[in-house]
Amino acid sequence: MRKQKVLITGVTGFVGSHLVDYLLKNTNYKVFGLKRVNSQLRNISHIAKKITLINGELIDQTSLVNALIISKPDYIYHLAALSWVKPSWDMPAAYMQVNAIGTINLFEALRATNCKARILVSCTPEEYGDVPKEQIPITEETILAPVNLYAASKAAQDAVCQAYYASYKFEIIRTRAFNHEGPRRDILGALSSFAYQIALIERGLQKPTVKVGNLNAKRNFTDVRDIVEAYCLAIEKGIPGEMYLIGSNQIFTIKKCLQMLISLSSMKEKIRYEVDPIRIRSTELRILIGKFDKFEKLSKWKPKISFRETLKSILDYWRKFIDENRY
Image 1: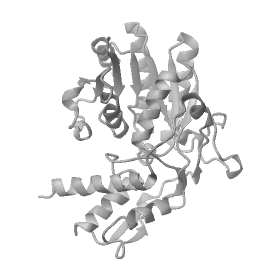
Image 2: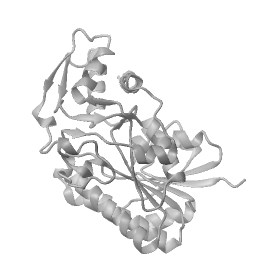
Image 3: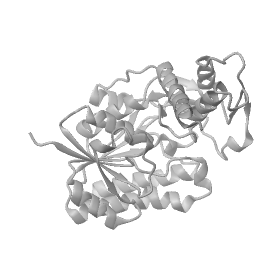
């Protein structure tokens, strides 16, 4: 039986690395990963020899053509993006170039090589903006109204996907996965930042005060290891041209997440927290809660990992990282 060939853009990232872990459990896949020339390989160091890495840039179409010629993929998971919200106000053109124009470059490379791969594009619920409370939960029909430059670039990417599906009938399945967390996320993320600081405090490397931003935001939270399983189901079962919201019904404020993380610490009685103004965004999404009936009906997918287990895995990851990198 011929192995299915999979190309992952953003393979060295948080989600990309967990997707590789999941795919390699199935011996029917040969995995290729598109990476930037100077990418940090920490997230995939344990699996780098089991996949084929290809240098490439979303802003360089020639490199994307080359990646498609080498990999000849049956499936493409397009995860690569500039994805942190706060820096997007400082470099809006770069976000649009990578996230929207980069997706055009990938699709034009598909046209140039006559590649017929099925494509999953990872969009974001940030595109919905600050949805009024009376319109919660968010569904696939909720109007997009981005309020930050990251979300605007992803809304543009979304429109590009719809145009290429309509014009060329590319087999594009779009997903918007609500907040997903787990080990390997960069400390620019709130929960990862909290866990990293708690681990530093436990090792005596930081005073027992966690610096935080807005704690009032409320979100659905899903473990990244459940999300990558959902992505695989979406690319296999999804209807081209359709959008699917993905997430769990584990709903918490950021403040509750912080309190749960602190409760997992050996120093929970001593740890306090304080707001750091630099961590506050120019615009904030107060409530970002979705309804996932459409995808669950399609795939029968249900998340398996509890949020407490997710938080413990994040904290353990940073404890190990600090221990291994102390000099």
